[in-house]
Image (cartoon, rainbow, N blue to C red):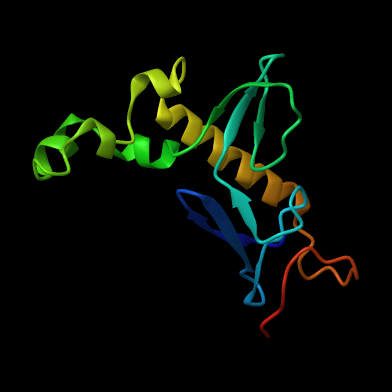
Length: 140
């Protein structure tokens, strides 16, 4: 059984993944099939049928789109108290409950990270000898 380590750069605007095959120390950047890119936009959208879509796949059937949920999940009242009065204004806060309603930013971040991990898991073809690799390069 091949064991992997996944490194996730969960960014405010976009995310990137690196996968390492522990058994032979091969590590490569993951190319997201939906974007054919190393990057996936940090976006969650609720569709009219109650399901979600992620990244930049826009079906046109979304009822709400969520951005900046990573930053909003990190903010709280204690954070605001610790910041200076100059930056402690509504305009400088990411967390506005009305923007993320009916979900919390933490819930949206969890959905997004889970989507990334399941996408990587279902698309790993590293070190299989296949020509249709989905990673960028191999370091041996």
